[in-house]
Length: 92
Image (cartoon, rainbow, N blue to C red; front, side, top):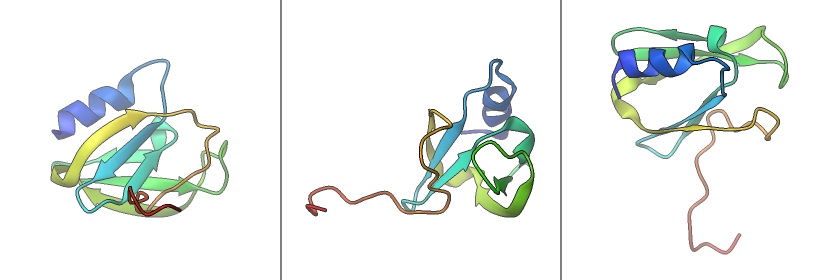
């Protein structure tokens, strides 16, 4: 993914929240387009206080080359910013 491709996704209207899957298994969520700041190599993502908040409680950063998949999701799903995806075949 290039920075320009990520910006295009952030500019789509109506905006659909985005889940970024990283190469190391972590997941980052962009729930509002104004909560993401894209540079040539990184994206800074504001982590809101609640699902509907547009005020960042803190920021998390990820390297754009490490983004292996981007998926839209329903903003009302439970947040997972920073969590690793569940491993398949573990029976949990």
